[in-house]
Amino acid sequence: MKKVVSSFFLFLSILSFGVLNVKADNIDGSRTSSLSVTYQYDTVMLSNVDVSLYYLASVDESGVFQFTDDYLDVAFDTTNISSSDLTLQAETIENYISSHQLQASSLLKTNQNGVTNFSNLVPGLYLVTVDSKVVGDYRYDASPTIVSIPILEDGTYQYDVQMNIKTEREELEQEITPPGGMDNNNEMVPNTLDNIYLYIVLLVISIIVIIGVIMYISKRKDEKNEKKK
Image (tube, rainbow, N blue to C red):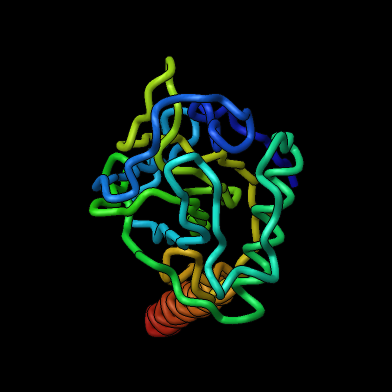
């Protein structure tokens, strides 16, 4: 079984005002925001896949996060956190959501280009999770990702965020379907043993018929010879 980690474009300045402590103008907490998530591996666009968005924390004008009641047990200090620790926090929160059966703030499917767009969002901290998808002989999985809205770019807060989520591809083991069973496409696999048995039966019948014809012809010849005598 092979596993290949795809390259991905992690948008710049994730949690920039919390993680990097960058100073900028005050954040507008009333500003309508959006998040565009792209789910792809190389040139494979993963369409019709559920993307869940969880609202973890609000943010004040100075960039300080306040976790909601649902996520107080998994709250963390966003200041100067490393990317590896941020990844671990995302996985921890995803497991917490699953064990506590918390509902997503929003749930959408990717379009034919593997893109989904969340609109009318409020600034804050979010977790993005994406379902797995099987295409051909491969299964694609996306890592949970924590994202802040807005993000800081060139000293300016951007309230419409775009991101390519980290995606892995795993080659599936090929299963051997027994003759007469159903394959992965729900199509019947021909039973070759039954075909062989049929051919053998037909061959035996043919041989019997040929022998019978030969014996009949031989008998007729003998009868004619007897009459000539």
